Length: 142
Image 1 (cartoon, rainbow, N blue to C red):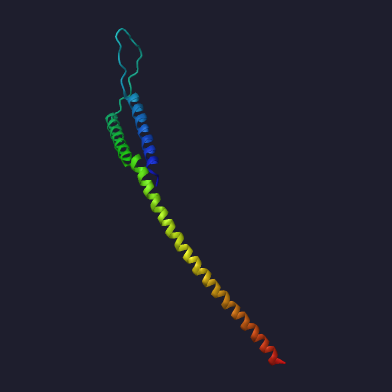
Image 2: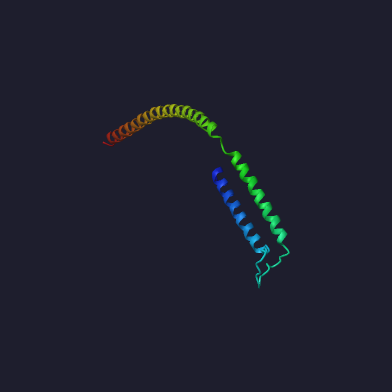
């Protein structure tokens, strides 16, 4: 999921796209204005589309929905003052957690070293017992 700034950027881009498309529809469906003392011959009237009002309604809804989304995203952004304070508190909490984790790690390493020593002693005992058995078997075979 995108962070809030990326969501805000995407929503602003969507709003710009809505405005651009709305202007394009206005240009397609608008009627030319007449100026006094200026006669233009062969003027073309735009094609009447029965859905003109539907486009106006659609773009009005899209633009207002995007504006609400932008407001919501802006309100959800953290305040600069509280952000520094929250970051400091968070860093202190993380430092404490890090120290506790380091202490637990040291304990685990010490236990591991003790266990490794026990395993090495057991392996030495096993190796010595095997050597003794081999020597005893050779002596018995003679």
